[in-house]
Image (tube, rainbow, N blue to C red):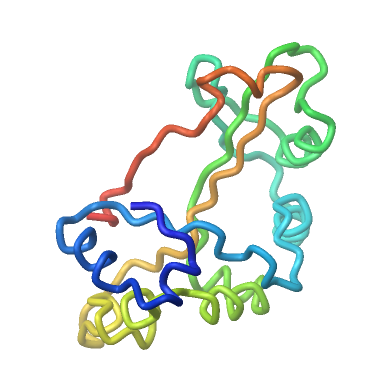
Amino acid sequence: YYPKVMDFQENNLDHFQTHWSKGHPVVVRSVLKGGSSLNWDPVAMFCCYLMTLNSKTGNTTDCMDWCKVDIDVKHFFLGSLSGKAETNTCQERLKLEGWLSSSLFKEHFPNHYAEILNILPISHYMDPKRGLLNIAANLPDSVETPDFGPCLNISYRSGEEYTLPDSVTKLGFETCDM
């Protein structure tokens, strides 16, 4: 089920609940379209974050053979601007993925965090702190919950490789999604 954020503004909650109750994934599209005054560009956001932490290496996946490789994070982000991360590789596809904890995201990007919470459709399901129908938001204080924030998944390809069918990110899920 792939609704646009506007679908929820039209009170299409029954359709959402049908999919949600069956355990279908719900991917909400066009959440930031036209409504954000903030820069959500990954290069702008994460270069700032990485400079703050003085990180040197990130774990990336070479999508040509789906193997984990190490690459300097600065080169990864600069490569996304130029179309490739390393000059000695002619056909390169890299993906950087990981989790930002909610508290870390809120601390380093407070305006972005607030905007996400304000934009969330059907907040009674999705609000991580006050959602009445969000089970994780209503657990007793004695229960320790994992601090999962946004899942970071940034990928790019070099040159004309964008047209190949395997240039997309594979659909997956984490055990915490179950």
